[in-house]
Length: 347
Picture 1 (cartoon, one colour):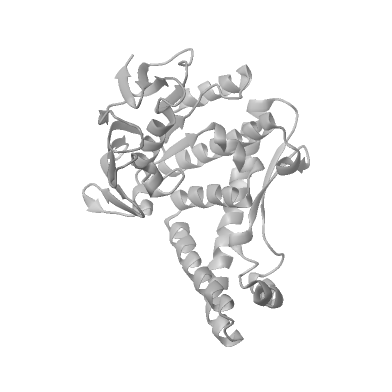
Picture 2: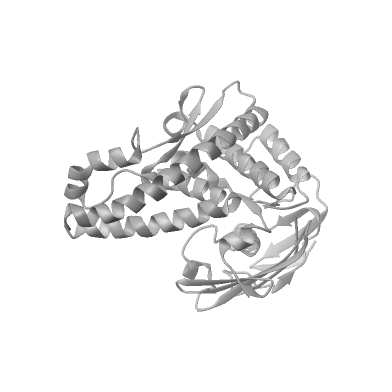
């Protein structure tokens, strides 16, 4: 896949209205605060229709109430046009001029964004790891994308019933759908994590070379059938006014050398583990589309030693297109862009 054009209006501090990245490796160089990360997140939004982080309003230029990001994408089946309209609390999507959903865009388009903050996937809260898993599975499976949204609606209704102290019979109305959706989500996650674990373990060995093995597994919130766990937790639910077991409480367990990476990994090991997870994401999306996704690599040299940077350059070269940012460009590149104050110029 190749991002042929990126257009934007009022996206964070970006000034340049249109870019046409080249195939191969495009280096984007600039000082801290110049807008390098903003550019890559605009690319990610344009290619996937998803915001990489934060509320919609935080992606608009200060003082503006509306914004726009558009992408022209070339893939094996032709050309696609993706348009994203932004306003506080609202996002609109179009694919080839027609109103679309994120899952519609995911059928034709894919990107992987790698940032220094990915280390938080290891040392951060379980919600970050669930977010990684849900985002990836939603792009791999339209069924999963619909399931996770339906589950969220049922969970919200069930929690409302618990907060208001409704009778068991009223709560059970929502419990049935909760179990139906939740069990399927758990099963899909289990199957996907098996493949993620294989790819991430291989990537970690290639990147780190420290003799440690990375293990990735799904840690469910309760053992046994979800319906039984839900019934057994009713007293605790009543006391807390919320659903305490289910896919919304699951975690992605990461072990290094047989020990919890969340608890014991160093900052460098966390960065390498997170990078291995992103490599697994890249490979699975590549298999799904039968072509490489657009690769977006922010702050190329951050906290990485030469061997890890060498692995990243190999990954970049494996992609049809990669945009790589840094205060200095990498040793080799096909095109150079310079960015300052959100304004981008050819180097």
